[in-house]
Length: 212
Image 1 (spheres, rainbow, N blue to C red):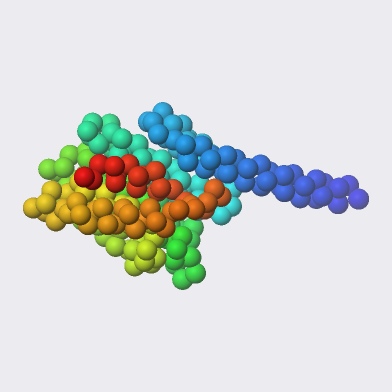
Image 2 (cartoon, rainbow, N blue to C red):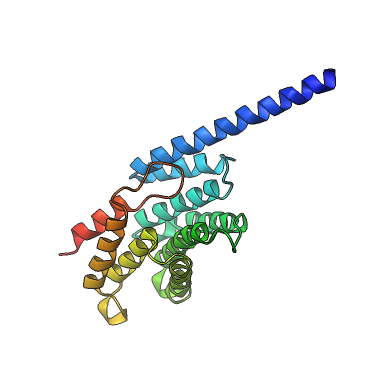
């Protein structure tokens, strides 16, 4: 009887523990939807890193996204980026390892999109030294995302960002950037508020505001 009681307590404890982690993930995603500053993203990266909610790939995915966002904010201060980029790469790879490549292609597309952003931040560290290697890797990861889920709005946003910021002589195209960002934004009219990736609307709006 005592063993049965202990087993019941463990089941109940596990249930409420899982519920608490699920709530923590939702609360962190809600905060991420409003994040704008380095302080916001670095704090949220620590939060996501400590969450063990299901689906298991989401906490490391969001932690990696926070590190990518941090890198983008620090793009003019490359000396500070490396630690965030390296950690973000590890987190994205962990998220990928938790996904089934045959049944979770859309989820993998989300992770590859963020991994593309992470490699882009590595370019910021030193464009002359790292640009060729990590620029190519960034493009390859984005292509994987677009192949796995054509029309993914976050992959479209990253593609638009790249086209906008790449010099014309190297393939940049502001008109194409506008088209891609507009297409992405149209897909995010009702982005949702759950824990599944839905970011990108604010990013699209900011990028479009820069394209005259």
